[in-house]
Image (cartoon, rainbow, N blue to C red):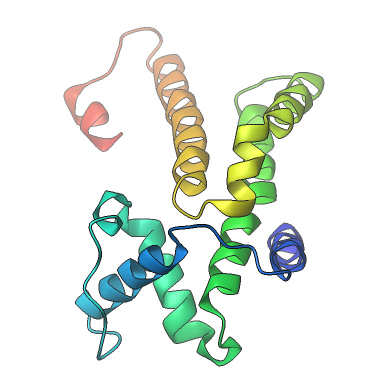
Length: 170
């Protein structure tokens, strides 16, 4: 919980100056349209052609945050960038925990997080791109999580492999 609160505060501080990119308005309209599709708000603009290339899950989370949870802040772009940047430290924390669960040594797990931190495309997108960074972050965590599940299942079956039911559950 402390990591999440720290991440939100850090995201708010870094986004306070008005971080904005060229497609923020179109992505915000796409989020509003998604929230409207679930009947949570009454009116919403039609999404632009640019919005259809955006994954719906994070856009829905941002739409709920801007339209339902924090509408009193009156700045949807600040909310969007704050929440997107908050994923950055949370991703490192989750990555570290997943690597430790996989049996990777502490020093190697820390080095992995440090290398990812130094990758400017990853961090730069965290600050500015509400479209790209969540997908990169979730892809990294889901890939490692699935690797752990497959490895643990293989060890549990004593090398016998997986049954069809187990593969469907994954």
